[in-house]
Length: 410
Ligand SMILES: Cc1cc2nc3c(=O)[nH]c(=O)nc-3n(C[C@H](O)[C@H](O)[C@H](O)COP(=O)(O)OP(=O)(O)OC[C@H]3O[C@@H](n4cnc5c(N)ncnc54)[C@H](O)[C@@H]3O)c2cc1C
Image 1 (tube, rainbow, N blue to C red):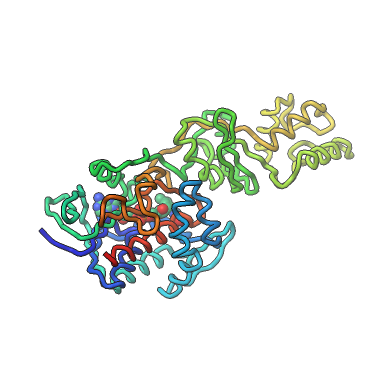
Image 2 (image 1 turned 90 degrees about the horizontal axis):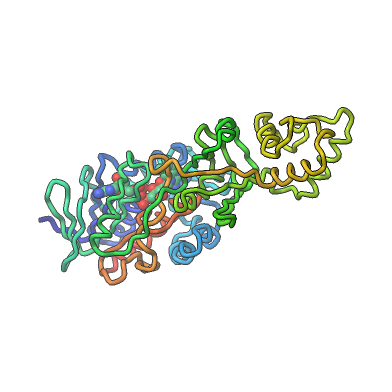
């Protein structure tokens, strides 16, 4: 049986960060990684560009993690704000740049630079990394004991568990951590895929494949009640809807099974402004057709789908042929095109897993599990998920920072 001071399970974003902090503070740290390389998900992230944090301030960024997540993350984002993450990467030789929608990328646009810097930093701090070392069980005793697939075991003073969730299982994350937590009798909120494209049963939605709407606001309704909204682009696909707008609200669909997504195509335009525009076009010379009248570049297929939803006899009519009651329905549809959704595309296509270790079980200042001295849980294994935009890496790094510091102090 091998003994180490601090064992980190999972060489992903959270584990590499925590290991570097802990080793730099003087602890003997060994990382155990199931796969043959570190940070596979980092390499795949942001379309291989890695959106590593956000331009938002710490408090504002935390607010995006729903109510319980926001409260939990406050100490972590205060200890390591998005701005500090950028400074730390710059110090590691990875300068960063701002991009639209409050995103931060490495200036090189290479996720590999981010992964390499994190690994280099952990090794330089003195952490050892064991690859191809899948943990199969975590046991409690005087010290924490990790049991590996090949039967050997390692004991440690502090066990830092950050094996990720179960999304994109081909990157090494197959939900192992949830099983360990349940075996330790710790409360796990049922995992569901999140930040995932949605499926729709409606053929008219599939016919819009390839159309992207940049300026919309998505509102997700369950049983007629709006439970989430997000102003982000949406993409129609052959299965349903994708793009950040749809993916950011997808966790609610994963939990509920079916819902209606209302797409406000013109969140910046009031109903009155739209009405004035439509009336003006009805009176204009030649009375242009619907697809030409709608503000923005509305593809004809989308305009016709809107016409069909409104129940117009001709899907792309001249505006003078649209009666008043149909014009009213048209405005309502433009302010909330109702897209039925009946599920998600599952873990294979989900960027993160929602659910995980219940947050009230964990001390938000240290990531130590209450009643389990020396056991730290953070990263995606926690019941914590943020929207697209570098927020999930920010949470992994900031929680890793606190866990690394606290484990070093034990
Ligand atoms: C395609 C894609 C794109 C993404 N893009 C972004 C983005 O641009 N910005 C952003 O903020 N977030 C993004 N995310 C989400 C982000 O990758 C995760 O939130 C983040 O990686 C979570 O960090 P983690 O350290 O908790 O888990 P991970 O980074 O998943 O690391 C967990 C590690 O643990 C290892 N492991 C698992 N089981 C075991 C075991 N039994 N024994 C030992 N090791 C084990 C895994 O192999 C893995 O290396 C993206 C996710 C995906 C799938």
